[in-house]
Image (cartoon, rainbow, N blue to C red; front, top):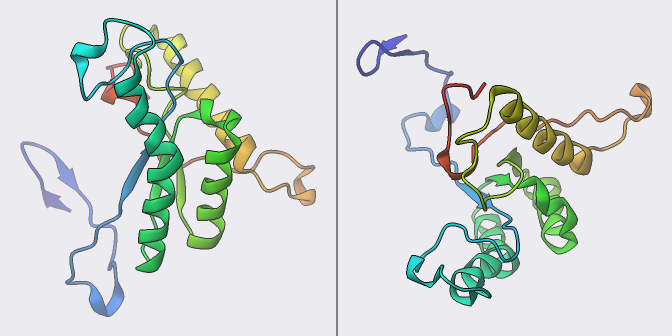
Amino acid sequence: TFDYGQGITREEVGNWGGPHANNVWVVPIINVESFVPNMFGPSVQPHLNRTQPELANRGWRDYGNRQGLKRLGRMFSQHGIPCTAVVSSDLVDNKEVMSLLHQFKKVNQWEIGAHGVNNSDAGHVGLSESEEADSISRSLERLGADFDEPNVDINDACIFTPKTWLTPGFSVTNLTP
């Protein structure tokens, strides 16, 4: 273990990269987020968040999931770089996005992480402990069910659970597990 900041210690996780251990390692994390229609959310141009339909900010969000994800997937694949995609569980209903993510997971060994239900509200700010736990559970269960590969040895039970979690809007609270 090493001293790391004030009173924080961390333990090295092993020899990453084998003979290339002295190289810098970067693991890209790609946010794949959903937003509730006709609800304001994170904005590149917040001054446009006054009327609906709000096209400019919605446009870049939609582009990111429809085209940006494809382009990033292609680019990282060309260089043999696996990524972690942190995914809003509402996207389970978006077949186009989910098809891409399934492909990247299978072919490119992408890790699938959870990123809450959606990214439209204040995340976990203001939720009670039980509401926050329920929101996290629902997100993990929906993504787990979608990415599960049924295994007859365990009665087709859901065996996939995302191992990475990113709270929507970085809204971690003192109650976040």
